[in-house]
Length: 376
Ligand SMILES: Cc1ncc(COP(=O)(O)O)c(C=O)c1O
Image 1 (cartoon, rainbow, N blue to C red):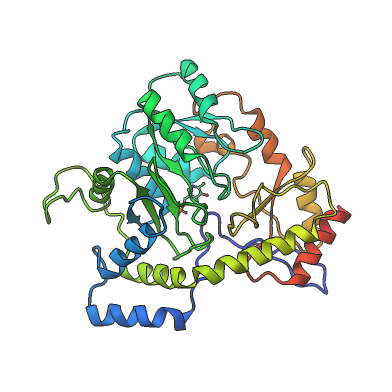
Image 2: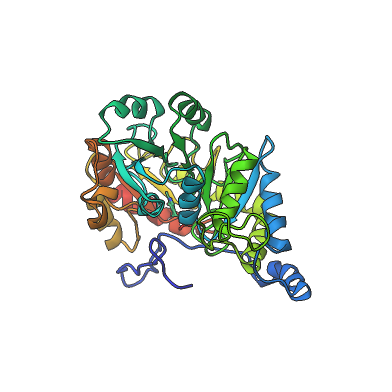
């Protein structure tokens, strides 16, 4: 697989006798699981343009929601955010979003025509707090057209609170739940999910938007498909951000496997939690590996110690990662964006660490991670 922004698997310098433990080891459906779907594509001779496999994938994803919900697949999670913002009519003004996120969120807002306004996150949830954003609105350096709250590494967020925020303020809300596939079962505001290979349900490159508002979902669909409403009649500015039948085949096979994938992630997560249980200085995100799963494991470590721990782990052949770098504002592209004080984000940047994790992580690797952290 070609390395991409946050997937490049570095090769840590290992002690001579031990294999390095890489931070991420994506595992997508293998050939046998894909075969029936690939044969259907061969038989259909339909490869792109919202074919039967894409529609089936959207239907099966929608079935996971507790209320009637429409799913629109997209080329990736970043496009999903941009096109959801555009469909919400947010194409001019400020887009409030957390500085503690992957750069995709800020790029997506810029692509929609908005100026990201970087806000600080809540120190406990690592996410935007609707009440704090409402308070900050009075200090906004311009008109706020949208808010994009971001799920911290897949942690469930209170989407109803964001729906209430939208009802009270009239400001568009698009929730970026890139890594939150597992716990997502409602979409009272538009929610975007990434289907990137690093995510729990991966297709390679892909994403989707979920919405309980059928008209909004239709508007997103038009955004993904050249603004077509009637066949081949462009009635609005759009782009091509559709998922191919091949990516949908991977998604369908991944959904078939999801019950066992989820159990494997739970089992591996709980093994890691147990191995680190005696280390009171390492804290897991609440519920991670217990009530919700994801493919990344980001832990809290003692204040400011993440960089030193990363170096020590590297020396022991354990690769770690700051999945979100030091926060969006530390990237040259976003350094000049308007922002509030970002104390919590700056703190998280040096007090959290992405540990190696995969559904098939070996017990021996888990032991080595625990030992390296204890020793450090
Ligand atoms: C918080 C967040 N938002 C958006 C994205 C973008 O998803 P994609 O890589 O599918 O474009 C990611 C990807 O990791 C992410 O972590």
